[in-house]
Image (cartoon, rainbow, N blue to C red):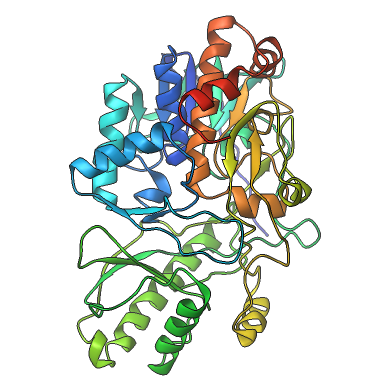
Length: 445
C-alpha cells in the first residue's frame, strides 16, 4: 500500500506573460511556435529536453513520412538542411496503397537541432529548455497560466492562447480536457520503439521500407541469434554515407503515464539493440557493424488523444473525407503495429501480414476543428494528441502531418489573440480562412 504525504501550498512567481504558449518543442510544437510568431504573436515554447525537434532529434526518428504535398515550414527545413548537408531524398517505394512517398526524406539529427534553433531564434520566440509542464490554472473554461518546473524551480507563465504539442496531451490533461487512450475495446496501445544509429553495415545494404526487405532483414538477424521483437524491422540510410537508422524492437503495453514502465522498456530496448548488432557481426558482411547512438528516449506511438470539436474517424479515412476547414491532405494508410506480443508473433508467422488491420484508406483532409479542444476554450492541439479515433490516429500520427497541424494551430492561435476571440470563434467568423492560408503556404489540399 502506497502512503501519501501532503505538499504545502506556496506562491509561484509568474515569470512571463505572452500571447501564445506552446507545450512541447517537437515537430508539431516547433511549427506551431514558428507559425504563431510569424503571424504576429509573442510566443513562449516549453521543451522538456535540451534541443528542439523531439522525436526528430532526441528520438532519432531520422525519416520523414507523408511529406507529399506538404510545403510551408517543411520546405524551409529542407532548404536549411541542404545548406549543412543534413538532408537526403529517400522516396518510399510503392506499397500497393494510395500512399505517395515520392517526397519522403532522411536527415541528420544534429543538423536538424541546429536548423530548428536557427529558425526559432530568428523569429524571436522565447524558449524554455529543460522544462516540464506540471499544472495548468483554468478559469471559466479558459487556461490562464501553465506551471513549469526546471533548473530555476517552479514557476508560472501567463498567456492568452495555449497549444498542446506534448505528444501525450499533458497540457490538456492538466487543464481538465477529456481524452481517449488506446484501442476502443481493450485500451491497449501500439508498441514503443527505441531508434538507433549504426555504422559498419554492408555497402550494398538497401533500405528496408517495404515488406519483403523487412522480412529478409528479420530473417538475417534471426540467423545470427537475434529473434527481433519487431518482426518488420526498418533500416534506412542517412545523409552521412556511413550511417543508418534502425528500428529493431517493439516494447508492448508501454503507457504514456507509467514512468516505471517507460524506464523498463527503454532499458530492455537498448539491450536488445546492442545484442542484435553484436550478434549480426558474426556475418562477415556485417563484421564492422557498431551502434553509434541510441535515442535519448523511447518513441511512444500513442498517448492521450484529446477530444476536439471534430473527431477524425476511420470512416473519414475510408471515404477520403474533405472539410471546409481543411489544413492538409494525408496519404499515409492505417499503420497499426500489433498491440501485444502474441499478435505480433502470430502476424510474423504469416510473413506477409501488413499493419493496416484490413482497412483501406483514401487520401483525406485533417480539419482545423480536430485541433481545437472541445472542453477548454483557449486550448489547441497539434501532433499525435489531436482528436481522432484509434484507427485514424494510426494514419495521421506521423511527423509529416504534425508540421502542418502545428502551422495551422499557430496561425489560428495568433489570429485569435489579435481578434480577441477563441479559436472556435475565429473559425466561425472567418470561414475558409485557415484553408486559404494553408493553400497559400503551398499545401496540397
